Image 1: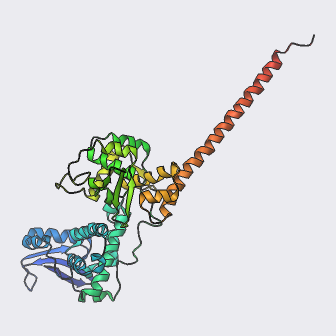
Image 2 (image 1 turned 180 degrees about the vertical axis):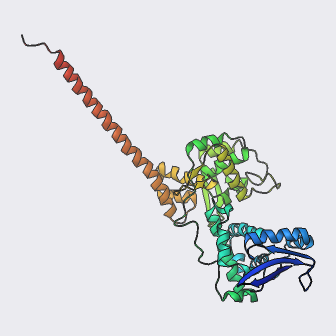
Length: 394
């Protein structure tokens, strides 16, 4: 397979391919620069060494690549084509495109100049197993899934001759996922964390906390909540959910109403971006800040396999659902607040709440049994004392 990377030369020896960065070397291999590159195109080791060589010996070319001028067939070029021509991208909801774009940005930053055809299954497995994904299995899986989508698109619509060497096989498909089984819900916030968070000296984050806990909406909806969405006559908030396109009215509980009454109206959105005047917060920024603060407060948890998890805004959505169930709300009532179109997720909240109620009831019965046994033992002991003190027959 031909690899079209500036200054990269492939040499075959003893059945193996070796790659060199060569610049100014004559036909006899003399003079100029000749640097052996580890691995092969598509691997992190190769990319790091190649970029180092560009920095030292072809900075003008690297500057061009940083401006996004990747050559035809390079991964960054394929991403540009996908965004311009794919109906899967153009018809996706804004929230979906934002999620995909985070993975595209990562791929462009780390592998943008690498030809798509240079990726093979070993390279993609190595990408999946990078140390930065060790605690983020779902992110690793999503990155590989985006790469697989790009490959399918390029093979169908980009007419890249280099891809023909793969004979129609997408190397990013059927890579074993790191996150197996049903996805676990975001960790439910313990009440001790809620109390600590409410006292944290960051008004914006505390405002998001109150909105998340007492409306039960997703982070994409939290950052876009506006003052003019509140009906003060009915104490309800209008929410156009980005993920589901549901348009719902959410009654605001007393605690939320009291908090918002103290919150200054500084602009269009209830919580304004600290970076861009008049804009809402970024979704990922909100999640990152929640994770940072909850760790700072000393609260971390794990999933069912013992892998570290942090508390997120979505965990407050789950807490809202569980509290509604614990308060005795019917399944359809919970779904109406949270905007669920089916009762599948609601059933989880109800099961969690029922488990607590049932478990407490069971333990209370045991306590009552202990108290009853203790009472019976005291009566028996009193009877024995009476017998001991009874006068002997004359």
